[in-house]
Length: 450
Image 1 (cartoon, rainbow, N blue to C red):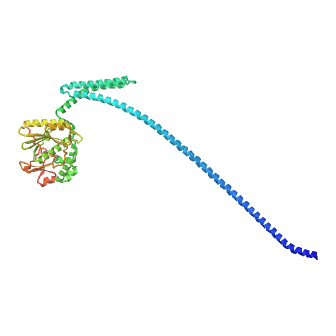
Image 2 (cartoon, rainbow, N blue to C red):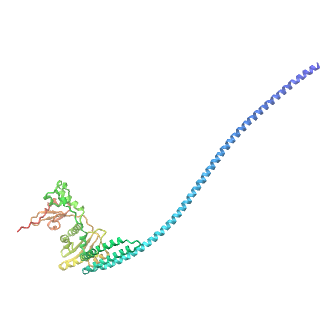
Image 3 (cartoon, helix red, strand yellow):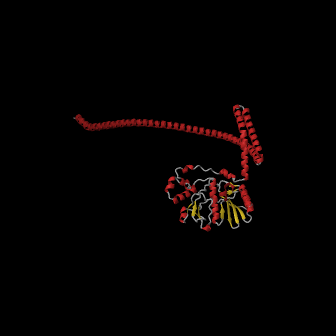
């Protein structure tokens, strides 16, 4: 019984201990299982972290390789740029050296050329001086001058011939050609120079001859007369109008249009000078002077007297020069005017004669000084301006009223006398409204046959 009780006691006491022990074992197993899971999880996490770390290291290594590649490329580019800069600087230095060398060569050539030009200029000046001395001789020496000039070119030709023969590579054929040409030109040069010196001497004696040389030969306008009737051909207006205009317009309209075109159409030197003389003469007439258009009437025999203007006892001998602004009046024209005025005074002792010079340009300083000392009245830079050109004249015989256009036949011979109610006007309408009609072409009477 005791044993049974002890067994019961042990059982009673052992069961809880067993339960507690079992609980502890279970708890331990759970903990071990939990720890195992934790270890397993930790192992998995550590494995994942290692993989991530390995991946990160790969990325870092990749970036490092990219950076190294970039650095190498940058270093290469930097070196290439530095090499280019160095090359450019070397080229620049080389260019500067070449430019300096070229400058030196050019300066040397310029100096050599200047020396050659100066030497040639001195030779030319000497030759010109020698030739000018020859030109100053008069007509008596002309044959001699021609001979001298011939000899001068003959010697010059010989020098050229010898140079061609004696140079390092002789040009015998060219020397022969020069010799042949020299023989042909010798006599021609002599004759030409004699004529040139004669002309120069004539121009010194009579300065107005230079104006003949400058006169422009009018173009042949005979073709304008084609298809016109004989009566129409007598009218100078056809030279300024087309055939259609001439036949379509009224007489007043075509006369006015021809006058307008006369102003603008190109003229010869003599034609421009004639218009200028008429303009200066008009200014005199407007101021009450009686004007004789001596230069227009006598042409090249006017002795330098373009206008002879009179008012009472006063008389002006006027020379007119409508020249380009780029030309200058020199003293020879002043001398000519003074001489012709002096000659006129000798033949007209009762008149107080004054020389007057009108020009559209300027005088040289010497010409001004001579004009002042010789008592010549100067009017410089007097430009041609538009002025009334139509002459309204009253016939002394039949009192018919006639107007003349500047291209009409009797225009230059017509004198306007204001005291007889004659006048200048600008338009055809003014003239016709005042009762004037245009002048008919004057024909010289035919001489009777024997």
